[in-house]
Length: 305
Image 1 (cartoon, rainbow, N blue to C red):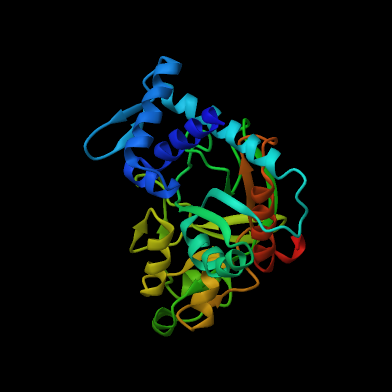
Image 2 (cartoon, helix red, strand yellow; image 1 turned 90 degrees about the vertical axis):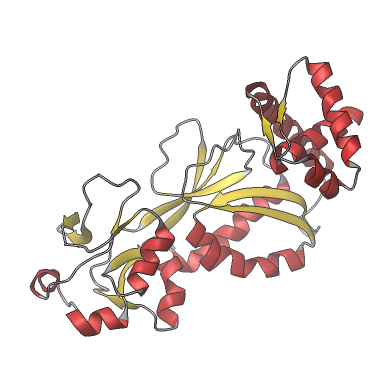
């Protein structure tokens, strides 16, 4: 039990990058946390943490040790709940990463109901558009949109998220409401261009054609490299945008955006739950994944629902 306590304290310090915050979250003294980690470094014979007056960072050895510690702690927690049935409340922490707009528009508004049913459950939710490192950053699972390029990861398909075309009412009043692809050219429409990195060629306007999808290169007055900025540009009337229905629905419901060309929607975007290992998935992580899948189902493309 002493070794488990040391691993728990070390993991919490590594995750919170602070001895003070880690100690507070565990209900122990800061000095106790510092002493335990120093003893752990003596036992392992390695410096696990870089300490400064402002923050605490994992060393290279520390990152490798942390990844294994997380696995061991997950196994212990799973062992402790192996006889628990579905009616028993979930407890413990879940660290998850997902696209920021998906977290903001769908997941966070639904969390109160989940946490009310499981008051001892703690969610650490990272909302970002970058590709986090599941192992080194200690994530239990992540939601990723699009293809999974890393073959070392385990992906569980969630479905195809419906994509739509949209624009602000003000923009449509100025330029016109397009009814066909030709209208995009003839009415002089512009689009907001989303690019992960500036300098690359804009992809253009995606639309279904023949047995697949094509791109129409439309002019644009603005290029952005973040999804929230992309949405804000559309809301500001700077051009047409294409995005996930799950994230644009709140704007459409209150009239800030209007869907256009509903019969010419972009290709649905694949969504996946991704974990580092198929094993060591605790009951609470499996339950959270199922809960998230359920709240996302209304936004899946009809052919996959």
